[in-house]
Image 1: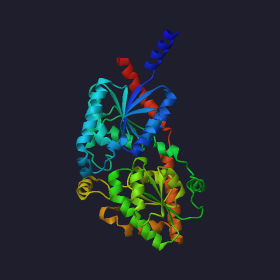
Image 2: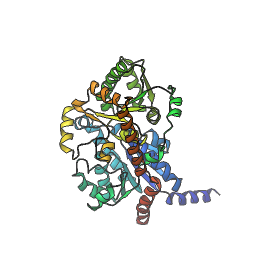
Image 3: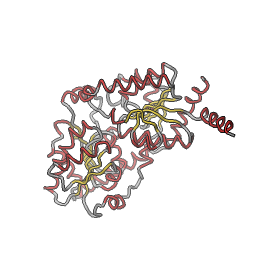
Image 4: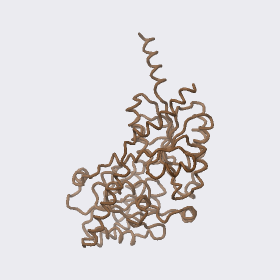
Length: 401
């Protein structure tokens, strides 16, 4: 009986892929977790290892390193952590070459993942990049490395596969997982009840980012803007969802600020905050897309080290940085970047969304229609499409054994 059980376990192992994944920050952790959750419907006993955050670990991914180690943005900021990050990538590469997975899936984090994928692919490991680097927005030279590194790219935006095909890169539009997770008609009243907020309050969500460097550059500006807003419109309610890894630090900074009694700091719960709010002040990044999927007006802000900003501006190919504006190809929501991201400007643009005048109501209604259409365009059966793309790579790997 014991021998039979061992034999069946061995057979199950040969029929189940062993995946390695790398997600480099909170948003990638969420995307990877949704992907893993779906892949387990196809392969209930799949094994997953790599660089993972709390959401991935909850889906059974063994974290060799935490995602927070890679949550760095900006040239100067990366340089401060360069040796550690390069050391992690080298150690991970060596371990994966010793214990090759059936498929490696890099989730966003292209600066880390593409070079790693190139080495793994050269050694015969099938490689998938989930979320294509935005070569259409900046750093188009990455396409050469993508061609060398990726067996397949899972794209979250519909125009990307055709663009990559022009460069000989296989790709599939799988939709954006968040478009399926976030309801088409968010229940604002339920979200406010869950957070203990008054149903008739005017609520502003503050989302200063999920990386420590973003918090360093933006949290103080956001809190100063909130204070100005409160002075101009008494009675505003502020909620600030903090990435769990940064919650203690963010809460301590808020408690030391003049807004200590007026900002509710949440441990995670960014979706609840976006569902509950009337307007969001949000750092440029995936959170701007989340706000758009919740159909919330927003003001996009960003600030980084001056040298990082200078280098970033040189690489940009479009006038927009926020995903809602990039996808709309228009400034449908304000962007206040670098020296423009003053507390006064942030407060002014955020309060403009809360204006009671007819033109402001029309502006909000038009934005809601546009965001609802965006939501629909990104809504696909992401897991089924991703599985269809991944399975042939795994089968090929099985056939090589």
